[in-house]
Length: 68
Length: 486
Image (tube, rainbow over all chains, first blue to last red; front, side):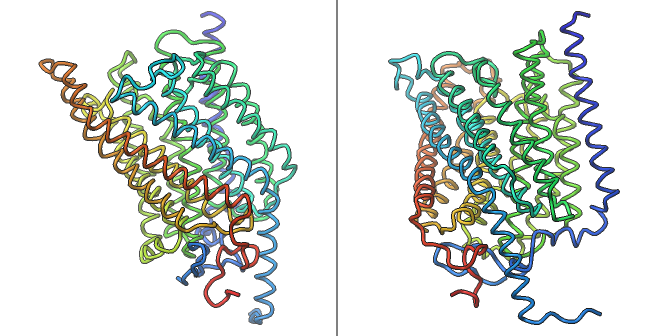
């Protein structure tokens, strides 16, 4: 096995370990930090007091945004 | 039991939340607009190059006087202009803005991102014009000359660092599904790009490993760079615009992790029938079919979220583009899964059918969602509404009709092209002649798309120049909800 072959082999193996390891770490962090505990709350996280659920936030210029 | 909020407290909460959102938008305004504006420039460049390449396929004596404008160079330059220029710069703009908003965190040191934007544009300039002047590499998706990648790597490094920095400074404890997609994209793409450049150009692998790496990268550029950010954008825009949470948040998380698990397998279906190990192509076909899981998860979710709200497509330009893109995502992904089957590939491979499929993905899905994002995001960054509803309508209908005509014409022509190529009794010249009307129709569709892009660019420039009406509805509403309008 030449030095180039070895470098390429390590790149491929390194990629597998990095990709797989990162996915496992991210998933375990998400479980531990409670990201998957309450899906209903998660889905509401993009809204806020100024843009609450039930209010549309876009319209053609000059036209009112209808209520949902 | 907490005391009920008084109307003054509700208004105060609302004002505080609006001020926070406005401060976040203000913090990323400059860099995001820089990435978005240069993306639009490369979209126009890419459109011109696409038209030249398309016309040459049915009128081969068009612009034959110079080596710079030969089909091979113009077509490669088009791919770099729209792939690395338009779509990637728009992806960065989308990732930065949405990560700031969803993390509820301001962008720090925004001026460094101007450097990233400049580096990316220099790289794209070198890629496009380097190819036109003869320095292109014969590697699909990596056609850029060898002096271009260092600019992309440096630019990408800054973007990734800033996205991660914003995420780490988040005030919102929950990680929304869009953030998962963005984090996935900024983790996957730089690594893919570095490995590919390393294995193809810097320390070249030998033999069939090169095309394997090439198509692992080529397919994953769509699947692990554009797709996550575009799907994530739809997951943000659709609920925000209609004011209704995602139908099944659980399903959206399943969709993300299924994409993370299966997408990177799929690239080898580009080499079915090629000189690669049979098991590799088979594994890729399996991965492609498994992609039905995340695709159907996203499709069900988007459709069920929109259910009962389709009338809002009349009112919101951003929603109109985004929903078109979301529908195209389902279509192109399901089509792609079946296209990966070996029997299907026997006909569709190496034909215009594949070109139609690629454009449904890159344009019908990714580009349409980014158009939707821009129509939503830009007024919130500049503080001005779009100046002309007419230009938006022209843009939408040219884009929607254009890509539909493009897809239908090349799919039909390409399928029969494949059938005829598989029949040894059909002369090759006859196949070329048969395709002419389909290729001509593709050029007409390209003209429509370009007209749409000109309308979009005009709107964009007018907005940046301050021609639009100043938004009067406070810092966050594009148009104040009914009853609040002043």
